[in-house]
Length: 438
Ligand SMILES: C[S@@+](CC[C@H](N)C(=O)[O-])C[C@H]1O[C@@H](n2cnc3c(N)ncnc32)[C@H](O)[C@@H]1O
Image (cartoon, rainbow, N blue to C red):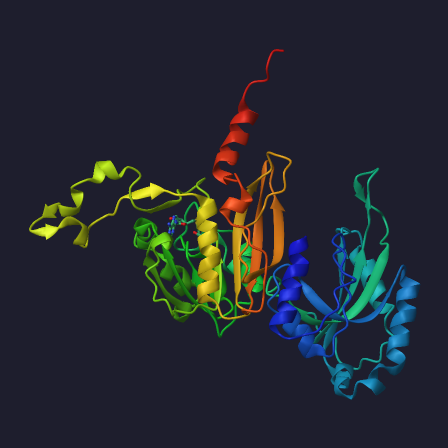
């Protein structure tokens, strides 16, 4: 749930809209905000993933008579105060009833009676159920009854408003980018909805170059293409980048008509970064390897003794390690150290104000706070948590600040023994041990 507010705040900041979110309640699906005009409402919501829609609020109340009273109050001055809204009088329109937790409690006949009860509204346009110019929505909130474990019979709150904008979610983006519809995906492919939310948290837009340093099957870049950013990335695993059955990341872009938003991906070990020092990136999004479904590896050897003399190995008169088909040895590495490197990468590559967003697993096995990595030049603005059974994952969002900013530093050493992989497997093996006979 914390994700929803973070997404809205990010969208407000992307469009420089001043919004007071102090009325936001984690357990309510509705939020009333004060905005200057329709354009601000559209900017705030049109690319939203965790929000469905935004309405110009005409009335609200605990029951229908109160709702009508407040709508009539609004209407008494609405058209005098809003000269630009005269078109509403003649536009085609429809009414709709939306409920939260209410299911289909209201039979069609009653719904029509409900819509008819608003006939005092001064509309002269025709009713059109398909593609009307205006939609007027009645929104009902039902409370959940803990005793019966079912929603109450009657709504406990009503709103009525003019639909201003449907979010990207409500316009079908999740269906469009569904993983199973992509020509290329794999076991590490990141969730569609959360990839899009991560883009919103990262302020991805059409002027930005987005980099994923653990790109895998490219979920974040594909999501970023929806916002017309240019996507680039790297991965240590050549086979992933090569794709399967002739399909690879770029085919996913082509499938959704975003070919031009795919920059490129390269095979590179993040721990041995080959990018030019002055290469700047606007936004970094990733899901680093945790070592559960995919190994965290870096180039190098665990036992240098075993490699002695191999540097001079020749194949067909060529030094083996200089050949194009050379596959370099790899060794395991610590996720904690890699995360410190990721933060430093962000400090080196992002502009001031640029964002780094990444997902980090945390084990729920011990009752100790999990310390997240921090770097003095990055401000951690969100630490959002998604809970699973024995572990949770966090989405961490950092903003690069200028030299005057003296933030917190928490490197691997400060964080202590926090190796997620060890703890993850330990907690699972503990859970699967038979109970003792004591
Ligand atoms: C959790 S997956 C990322 C999945 C990706 N978000 C997707 O949607 O498919 C982590 C990726 O990091 C890659 N990786 C592991 N070690 C790496 C390293 N040292 N440098 C770059 N990539 C690495 C793995 O090959 C894997 O593809």
